[in-house]
Length: 225
Image (cartoon, rainbow, N blue to C red; front, side):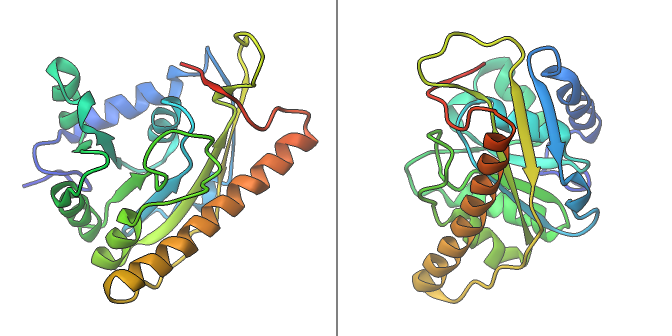
């Protein structure tokens, strides 16, 4: 039997320990500021969608969420001891740029069991402004009936032209969960994907405006690790 909210083969104890470590991992490197955490539904299937501009966002979100999140992680990470560890804490490998239904089916089952799955609809790292989105998130909603929880993250990328920063401010804004109607066929997926993209892009823009008012840089160029 699979642990509650995790794929087969995962260890709930190891997952919880890794999330505890993740909660404190970046505190020495970043000044984290989280708003809206109370909006995370405490029960039921939740699909987290977040913007993606560096390798840090998945780890920050993994540590901050009050529930067990299952991430779709690029397949290249699943080698050796790291790959074993990622599988044991319940993360799911996915091939980027190729049709790959197996990870979608695995994560859909996690959602059907009432778990939390986190995806980055942009598909790869970029500016993090959600200018485009792939259909996988909408497909997961259609397959599971999960509510969608948008999360915007800014500050993990170094401002263009600047040197390495000392403990930069990183802001995380959790949006309001919403239901997403996904119609039949590809047209239904396309329409739902655009609505999801619009909701997440709007949340990122809101965070950008707030950070600008606080005197924080909005965009960056090079990823901070």
